[in-house]
Length: 169
Image 1 (tube, one colour):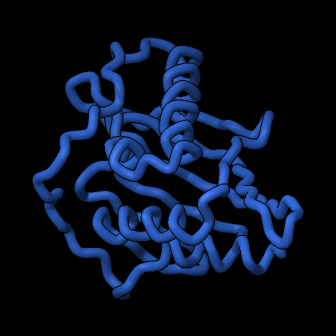
Image 2 (cartoon, rainbow, N blue to C red):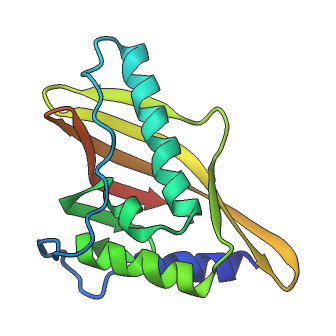
Image 3 (cartoon, rainbow, N blue to C red):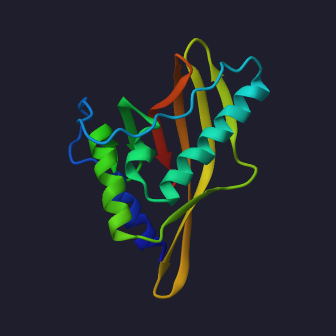
């Protein structure tokens, strides 16, 4: 069962090439950007901001809304997956769309007590935690945990993910 979950995640996040290439976003229905927020002034405010972004972003994941989910990623995102390799923006978007089509009941939750947030001077924040993905397989709930690091960049009050490292699958 865990193997199926891993295969689903690999399918969603695997790169089709060994190197990510910058791909501009194509015109289409505009998805709302992540909410602008004032620049946090303390570590606690930064933690709350990133915790809110995690909740919002994965609400889009759990709703299987690819466009809304991808609004949290920068055009130049690099997504490193320990099993799937390196993906750019377009490959990451394709992977999520494929995952949602192959596993329409997949959900993600943040494992309680694992969220860590660290400021990155003159850039944004690092977001480190353990997440749990679940889906039904043969009528039974199948779940697996993995760890991740996301680097968020704040520009003009907008937060976007520029790097993801997803590992321990």
